View 1 (cartoon, rainbow, N blue to C red):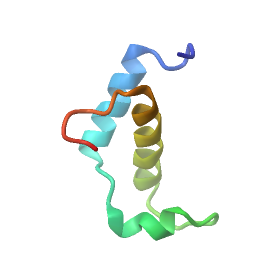
View 2 (view 1 turned 45 degrees about the horizontal axis):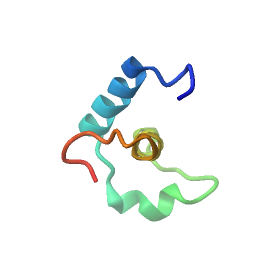
View 3 (view 1 turned 180 degrees about the vertical axis):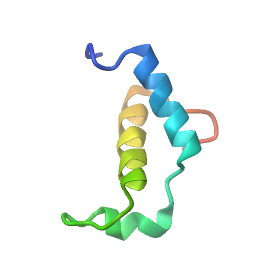
View 4 (view 1 turned 30 degrees about the horizontal axis):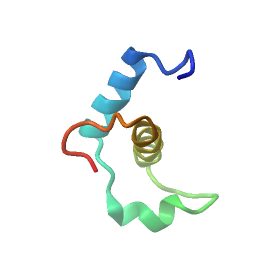
Length: 62
């Protein structure tokens, strides 16, 4: 694990993902290079990818 991915940051990402769940209505828009997707959706998707790779998704998020 990198120095940046501290337990505190992982906890913050888990909290973010629970408070800002991925809205699948934005799936296609988020894949575009010059997307006009809400920044919160982009952040949630980034947090999801990191947490999934670490095996640290919060309960109820799959």
